[in-house]
Length: 148
Image (cartoon, rainbow, N blue to C red; front, side):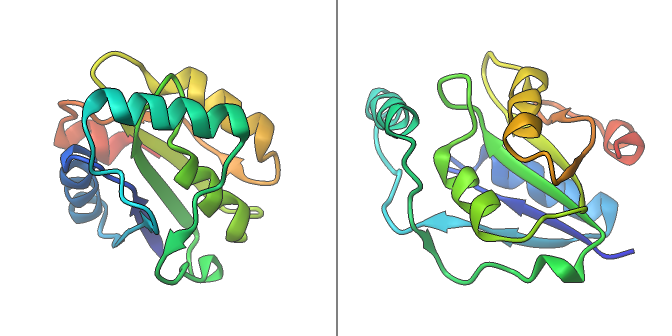
């Protein structure tokens, strides 16, 4: 079974979680980046994220989008910004063909949990076979092994 862990990380927290998950699950690992940098202060990130949410922006991705047809399972990692995934994740979901793929979200956040966000994604992208999300903050190896 081919598995991909694809993630977006601003501060490195999600990257660390993605690396741990990929290692434990024996998955390929790929970082996605946007053309514009999100390396900015916390409050500027909040403002930028809110602006992208309200305008339904889809930031351009830097680099090549992987061929999702090679994978049976896809794990998508990101921080939670303003009770949502960063819009760069929506760019990925719009651009790549996830139809029928077993897909799950894992998130890192100081306060929010991924369940409500996963429900929003399920409504926006019903063609994807969504599975239970994972709160990757302090996640254990056993929790990762039992997930999806």
